Image (tube, rainbow, N blue to C red; front, side, top):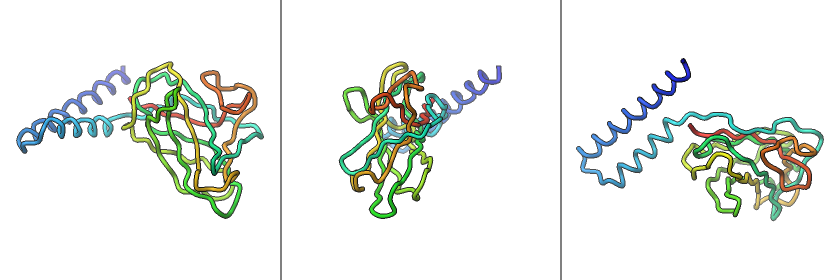
Length: 189
């Protein structure tokens, strides 16, 4: 009952916010395109992040990336909508030359749906979160998508994406043979 009430109050707040946006837009002479853009921003601001997919327990494995080498993990969300954020467990291996890390969300054919970047984390293991803000491409539940990490301005082997042997995450697979990378994915509701 509380969940239903919460969902109704969220929808009501979104409805009221969109209504006010339309009224203010009409009074100010804003075009339909500008009102639609404001409505999209209101939808993203009203979105709730829900932990949807995860493979969070590593073993002693990791796969290096940096330079021309990227690492990818497939996943199948259970939520229809864009990605809110993604958290990964990585290790910075070197003290010099570490650059920005970029995470992209892609379709199975490689088309980019969303992207976010972080500055180089400190040496050692870290768990950075890539904020995608619910404003990227829409994902369909139970379809396969790709999370890809890259650090093209860093030397090869600067970073490692921690992983786990076998296939502990049954809704996807790492692009390294018989390994799944460590990640958490939140969808937007």
